[in-house]
Image (cartoon, rainbow, N blue to C red):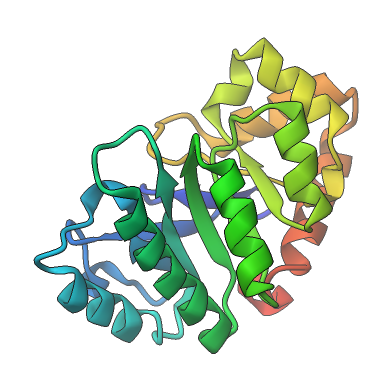
Amino acid sequence: MRDFYNIHTHRNSDVWSLRNITFPQENQDIIQENKWYSVGLHPWFLDKNTIQLSLKEVQETSKNQRVIAIGETGLDRKITIDIDFQKEVFDKHIELSEELHKPLIIHCVKAYSDILEAYKLHNPKQNWIIHGFQGNLETALALQKKGIYLSFGESLLKNEKLQQIFFNIDSHLILFETDISPVSVEIIYQKAIKILNLELEYIQKLIKKNLCNIFQEIYLI
């Protein structure tokens, strides 16, 4: 089971996974010694009245040795929360990622140009990962040109346009996830090998290598 890797999930799993802690619904009390976590403020749940307290809680929790990534955080132009406020909070997460030398897990909906703008502005040294990527090919290539990883989840199973994009991008900058879905990450792997016409073992080694370029290998055991 250790040959499968799930870069973003809100569920506990039998395979290696990066379990997202989403404030304020969850807190560091869920952290277990044999699991790995990411922590951040999801743009859906931002509140100007509590943002300072929430950011402080994220900062404190992110120092836990079991927390190896920041996020999910990001930008979502489909929601009613002010985009400038979202950007302010996103910037705080970028700064925290750089300060703690931990990669950034990004939620992005109809805001890829904003993400690229933020990348140019901050010129981050830490890796960025777009979780649940569902943009077009042009966007995918623009993100990968910056070295940004794209993570694919349940949508890859049935979305033919996304499958075509997946086929045409750099496989050295891809990852897999389940997010909130009950689908196992193994199913995502199986779909990937059909799309790319590759052996499962090759994809398993590829994804592990990609993760080793993001995290210390000790985190992957």
